[in-house]
Image (cartoon, one colour):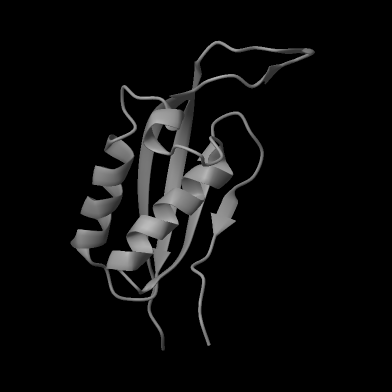
Length: 114
């Protein structure tokens, strides 16, 4: 039977702009996020440590600084985390990111070549 492990990290991050009800709002504002990583292996503390280290980099910075040119929402964060984690840990099968107060998760699965 195949085994899976799940890792979690919560973090806060700010981004610029966005839409505030009916008008564009250029001011930076923040969100609380939760990242969930699923791997196709027994538990490995290195994955949890890497996830924590990556999400800790967001503290005190804007998403635009961390991910220049990328989408600064849950989709962009999930893609950014997946790219970095799956290079080091090929057993990772998905990364979910949810912003507090928003519905649903955004999932990114690694790109596989056949």
